Length: 289
Image (cartoon, rainbow, N blue to C red; front, top):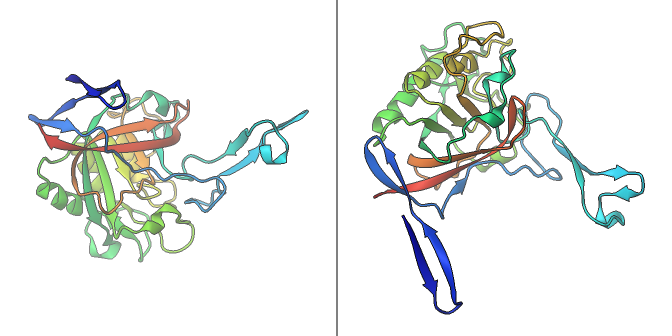
């Protein structure tokens, strides 16, 4: 629905668009002017999050014959060369090409402008306290995001699982914005049963505030990635995958003031023809229409 509102003081027209979304048979109005950006803003010159032993993302001025891309060094303009590892430096979205031999560009995925999304806050569980995760490579101090914990929060959600699921792990602290995950405890990760549960819910787009849905070093097993994309437990072939269009977005950050519940997700992915690219997920609040 479109409407034109006249601003009498400035003498121009403001074009207002109302976006309606149907979720589970319920009509919602998308509050399109108040999104929350849940990506980590990657500052190439200051502290930044990283993991898996990757170097920090870097920026340097372009230098070619007769030109330097730095106005402070006498250049006519600023032009930087950026170096980063999308999987390890900040918020990124992955395609099945991350673990499959067949190329699958992440730029071709998540093309819907707005996707119904459920935001849930989930505590991790000590590995030894859970019956989940048989066959996992793990160490005594590991912590899991379990199917039991996800099921509990989903059952209390008013509208239940949606095509997109955003997982905010607890505790949730500002340190996630800059954490070097190579030092300190191993970050929590999904149990295989948790990944299976997401598949049973038909979650197509998973977003999580951890550096990986799997253990950082798990001898290459990647249980959660494989189960989420419907791949076999081993190998790089994906012809039989039932979920080649699903995406995984890692290293988001959901502010504490954002309440659990239903949202509209705009999953904005850099148009890189590769298996993973930096991304900027936006969550738009909804209200009953």
